[in-house]
Structures are given as structure tokens and as C-alpha cells.
Length: 189
Ligand SMILES: [Zn+2]
Image (cartoon, rainbow, N blue to C red; front, side):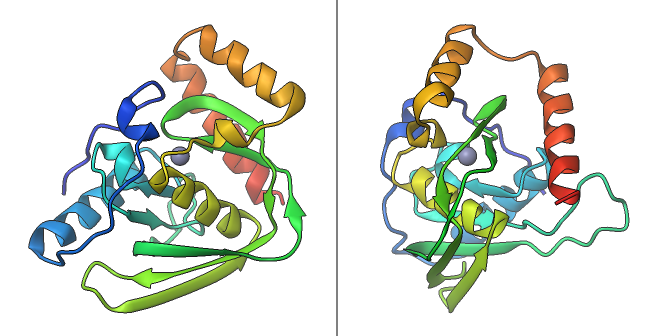
């Protein structure tokens, strides 16, 4: 088990499109395991390799796990070389990012989405969903293309994000509190 440091906004690796994975070996399996450990430790519902400084097209996710509920079960999934297919509908709920700690802004996304690719062993996988899961797929594939969710913001939300980033890093205690509030918001619907 290894929890890796998470790169934050301003780090060039987050703005660099990641390369397709071509070698499926023990190192890739290890990366996936470490990314899963890092995601749960944060805690977060998804994590893309550039966020731990690795420029490869791989992300992990678990949108069902509830970090605040000790009985909640972990079911982590891995997608390598994902191809995103946006579905119908739109959603505009709050979105956050482990690489932009403590900030959440309403972010337009499609309501449904699916991803296909392979797992860390190279076997084909395909997942689809709506709501938070669809948001997660779009957010993580954006990371692999070198795009932060901040780039998806519009109008006042975009201006608010720019102002917040200018104010400098968010206090860790405040960031944790904001994360807890967002998670409880998601549980209530
Ligand atoms: Zn993110």
C-alpha cells in the first residue's frame, strides 16, 4: 500500500495530455493499486494518473463508497486508455477536484456518460452511468487530456474560481470541512 502525493493546480503535469498505456506489466498494476490507495486516503471518488505525476491514460474510481460511513464497502475500478462517450441530458451540480483542494463550483456536464477501455491487466471493460458517476467519467478523462474542471466553468462561477485561486491555497482544515459538506449533500440527493 502506498499513498502518493497529489499534484495540485499550477503543476504542469495537470495541463499535459497523458500518453496511452502500451505496456501491461507489474508496474502498471502497482500504479493502479497505489492510485486506489491514494483515492481512498484523500478521500475522493476518482483519481487520474497525472494527479500523482504520471503521464499515462489511466484512472480509478469508486463513486459508491462513503468515506464517512464505516460500514460502506470499497469497490474500486480501473480504466486504462478510456474512450468517453457522453450520453444525453445535462447536469450542473457542484464539482470538486483533489488537485484543487477545498473548492467546489457548479460545473456543466452531460447527465449520462460511458467509458470503455481495458483494466490494469489489459482485459476490456465498459462502464456507464448517470449523475455523479457520469460526472466522474467526464472529470477523469478531462484530466487525461490535460484539462481541469475549472476550464469547464462559465460566467460567475468561472470568475469566482479565478478569484479563489488568486487568494492562494485553501487552509487544509477548511478543505476537509468543505469535502465533508459536499459528501453529505450528495448522500441527501
Ligand atoms: Zn480532479
